Image 1: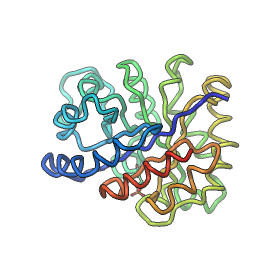
Image 2 (image 1 turned 45 degrees about the vertical axis):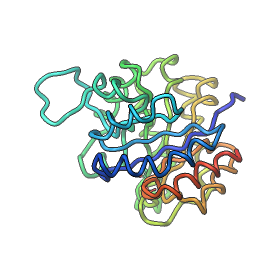
Image 3 (image 1 turned 90 degrees about the vertical axis):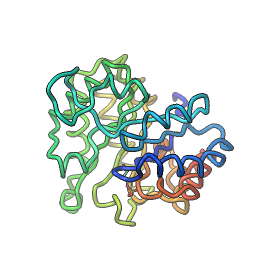
Length: 255
Ligand code: 13P
């Protein structure tokens, strides 16, 4: 099996001004830098990307945007292109359930964004996950598999190695009700990796990192990282608290 270095990413969502972002990074930096063997990634709002890229330079902490638009440039008021993101970032979160639900992003939109990110040399953190209703109807596997196949249609095997997948069940996001590590591991083993294998072959399926997201905190992080298929976490609320986020990164060191 391929070695998959653990990855802990903080999705700050629409929180923190530049001044607030600088304060938060200053607070978490010593703790983050003290942990080796875990890849760390911060995804602040767009205005904070430029100042944080200067501060994080040479510190082995990655930066990611929370979205991009697939066109190269032009009359798209309010949007960011992949090239603009690439100036400051290595990663970009795509297909987050909040983008799907609040901003009506379709699987086809997300597929175009994934293509644009890969073409620009950005690593997508592609989010997938079922709603509570879909979960209760026993449709989690079907939804996750179809979201993956739709978003990754047309991606080439060699660029697929740049992907990170985040399984984020919608009912676990911001609710304090995390999925169980065991059920998550089963879904990753039986659905996420086989879907990747069907699209890109075994090598990609075993080398791509798959994260869990949804109410991860410093207290429950280790229980997720103990599972064989879970390679890290995409953290929302707890990534806005220095101690919590550092605690999750420390927990990932045990992997
Ligand atoms: P919470 O950690 O706040 O549940 O959010 C998860 C998430 O949506 C990360 O992208």
